[in-house]
Image 1 (tube, one colour):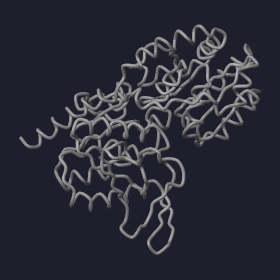
Image 2: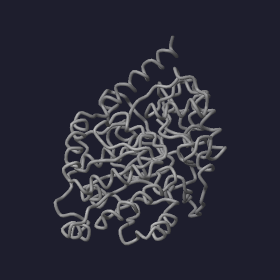
Image 3: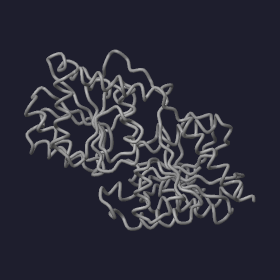
Image 4: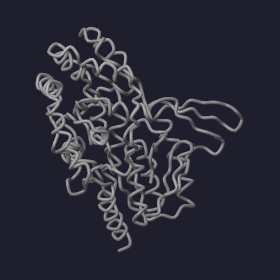
Length: 398
């Protein structure tokens, strides 16, 4: 399995999904060698983790979020920074060496960053290739047909040459067909999921003492957790939130995450006159991350195009009702929640204001969505993947 990140060294949902899928697959007896482009401690005992980088490099460190450069520390002490495309090429070269010695039945690659290496592994071994698409370039660009042309070429070529494609939602499957003209029958949908057993109970003493004190003064809290990128629709959220504040001045918006839109969003909040009501935390992990969900009265994910979206499920797990965009994969599996078109700022504002004004509405939404959440499991996703592995392996041996 070729991946780009795993917790706790992840920048988003890709690493989380890979971790839980592999954990569920290992329970079915699947022997996994997971190959990463960097060296780190992960405290994982259900699969082997291998680092793919040049032999003269002692350590590879991420210098920022997933699409930033990597810092290479060589045995000689020399330090070199490599951009994301250079890193993908180095990863491919390292995979060439790894496949000479590894024994495996299937190559499973996650997203475009690993696809060049996956194609090379398939070429060298003849093993079936499964390309798992968590998002495509047009998703990240926030527009159909948009994005980096080189990334699009890598995505399109790898999906054409793959033996099977896994999409994390029907939404993503249709985007793949639209953007790359891949036959529908070549794509299987395996939704991401959530296991209640993986939920870490949030302590009673909230990390957000200021916000908790404001709630005691009658304030309500809306939260968004994710990367600050155009894909996430946060400019629409701020415009909608402005309308909420006009109706309910005692409302706060907690924005958790980092990304290239950070300063743009700060500026927009100021222009809209809502700066005193919007709190930007930056990227968080651990207790502060968990408490961000728990302290809120409503979680909002207004994504322009969200292949799946694990954060609404996390929010429900920590006791918060959710409002999600209809342009998300998670909307296919989560029915008892509020849903809105990402572009409909007025409707988004109305829904947020309704929950802020009516606590009973939020309680009913949460209770109903919790019933769906409680029966979710990564094991169901693993069963589907296991069947794909078996089918592809048998097709090669016949």
